[in-house]
Length: 213
Length: 303
Image (tube, rainbow over all chains, first blue to last red):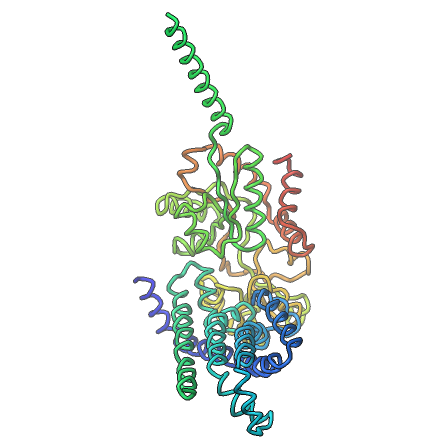
């Protein structure tokens, strides 16, 4: 309770820094998620169409999954230096596996009979992708993005290690100096953001699911 | 008569067996020494010190569990207070300011006495003897930056700060003897930009030209290794940061000789020695376990 009080006192005294950190945190998470989605959704669709490519892409992704984000930060730091760019690389890599795997599985598991019917109706491959496959796959792809989002929001704290700022600064500082209140200034918003990301992104998922039925 | 003899035999055999079990039991636990769990924080010097304590105690026949690399002062201290570890290396200045929340003092002896008394009273923890080294906070720049601004003292840096980028380590922007302390004691110190980086990256930030100024510690190996220039603390902002093992009193009650054994190491840990040992690990990329072992052999504390 005392810790929570000191967290609020700190927050009141450093409101400008908090809002700035929150802004950086969200920006970083959103940008990383966008990059991961932009790369992994097309890659997943492509992988679903060719078994050889699919195998290859899945192996690469599984390998990436093993590398800790902190290690990526330290490896990329000498090339990209301080701050947001370096953090974005690590976070985009972190966000990739759930998006890619879900996209791959979603497009892969579409009933062949449906696709055959579409071809039979004279639809072009582009039309099939746009009107048949994507709506059917969308809920699973969205679920992947949702998983990635909560992971990225939580892990964006790592940016604090490389001059990237964000809510992680409060956590790292609090942990380093035995100040639980300071730790909570970063920790509680990060936890709430992760839950919020999970919750907000389940709305579009719910909508697409309903539209299919 | 016959059964009487048999009964005596049975009793004799049972007695022998019992004695044998007792002897075997005694052999399995020689001298009844406690297992000692050693912690450390998560940077090179702490790992080196933790490993040294472990090796020395092993040399004296203790079984040791290494719980090194704990994430910072908070975690190490909590682990110690809750009896998850038995000892870890701590700095007098950190104990004074971060743990006991006392006012900074600059006299090394006074600071040591304050933390020794405070820790015993608050947490029943014992500070062993302090080492001569002083891992105080400091501010370092590359030689090039020092020359460009003709800057060798913190007073001078206070004026030049608006042109400089500071690579701060965790804690530095928050603790009273960090950036706030500089601003209070010296005035100025409004850096153009302050960016936080992890301890391991601060010098790389300077070498890569990503920042001009960073937070150093008195025993950092890189100071010798890369020839950084440490600003003189000409107004005496920082208290001394001497290192000593902090030990649970329960352990010392059980095995008082642990204090004497570890105290014998302390006088060997001078500032120059510690810089060199840190540089062996951070600069020459050698295993801290090996560096610790070699050093202890050199000073004759292990074989």
